[in-house]
Length: 489
Ligand code: LFR
Image (cartoon, rainbow, N blue to C red; front, side, top):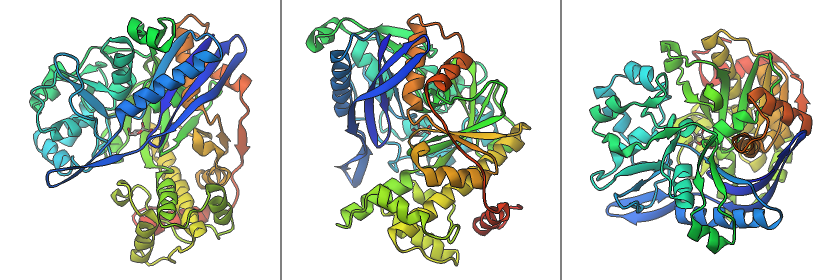
């Protein structure tokens, strides 16, 4: 069975052609395109948007390209979470979707917490506090009166493909308007905060066929009226499907890309005070699982650094930066990579230097030193998060699976093993696309009864790379104490 999987990340999107059959699983990229924020002026400032029409066009180009090389049986889209388009009563898009790194929600979380205390909000939604949660973004809208429906990005693209509107559960669970226990919209919460619940469309599970390509669109693209399947439409949910863990192992995962999503797969949400205080989230996974994880600022800081050097007219290729970083002594300077200062786009090398100077450390200067600081700091954040996840749930972690683009970064994988003190199994790089095609394949009749079967197929068809922990654990404990003196190693 051939399937088109569109996987849209914050920095790039791609359409992959996937093949699934007994003992067969592969994905091949047929179309890749850049993505990112587009800043435009408004009265008194500017807003950071996405180019959602451009993304739709690229997805169509990719689907056509995938079909050209062999009959497709279905289409599935996953993307980053939380962002959305608003439709009016006629189904027309109202305004251009705003990028979650825009600052429009400044001050809003604090206001919400005055109405709904943090403990209550977490008790309902199980969600981490991030300034860009959909709830906060909706409250930053100037006017919701003309809006009839809110569609998260993959649901919006599915709507344009099929004409069918709905909300796929894994992504809906990132809105902070979803009740993680009842698995329904938290309509009471929405009403209390002044968000009309008509905005929240009917929910469906990953694996639902949402519709078929609109006849006029199919004709325009010279495609059959293919089924469009709601996959784990949150990219992280698809990536977690793609974590090739052996049944019965105590594993943590890191879905490593623009963000690093670090956590465990649970059967039920963990809604205790300690989880809330540690800012863990309980996002819905495929097949009723819970993604108990924390957002660690990921390779974003490195990609923004590369962008800064490029803009300065001193571009350095990633491979060269990483080679230089490997030669820099370990843990010379570390930062709390999750600090809010690293969230908005901008000159990351300058911010890193500033933080290192402020904390009395050796200030990294060269691209290699900056990159080393980022990678050491990421590994340190992984160490902290894996330990916290284990403590909060009482589950040991014996292995860390790294999936996504970061699985290619050998230095980072080794540092992750060293910092966490357990082996790292790296790969597949294409976990999100694989999770996307596996859920589609099952919806369209493939014999993949559960996550275990899907993961077994990944293990049988993809090679993983193993990194054993090395070095002195005390060095990591010391570095942890450097950025957070409250931490007891
Ligand atoms: C990763 C991701 C994260 C989400 C962030 C913002 O691509 O989807 O899971 O917290 O992007 O949407």
